[in-house]
Length: 120
Image (cartoon, rainbow, N blue to C red):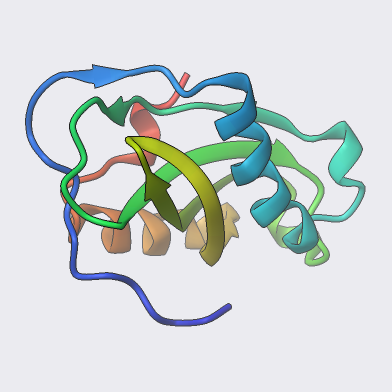
């Protein structure tokens, strides 16, 4: 966990679904924080169609086993997504938590105008 988040917020405006490749980039960033990442089920939030920064904070939910049993199940996460040409090309894990600490990630996401509960 880097503890570093970009100051960029998610721009208001039209949003789109992530591509299969973009989802893989994000899953690769989240997987090391999970126990048995192959069984994880991801819920995806929308991504801005127009990105003017090189990085964008992205929040969503993964249903998975955690190295910490109290966090098993739905876990909210925030990653810093690297963007090039309007597409996610890399991602760095920021924070992930489930159980009673799900709300902590939700509050961090809210600072950037994001809500992991809007993922589906």
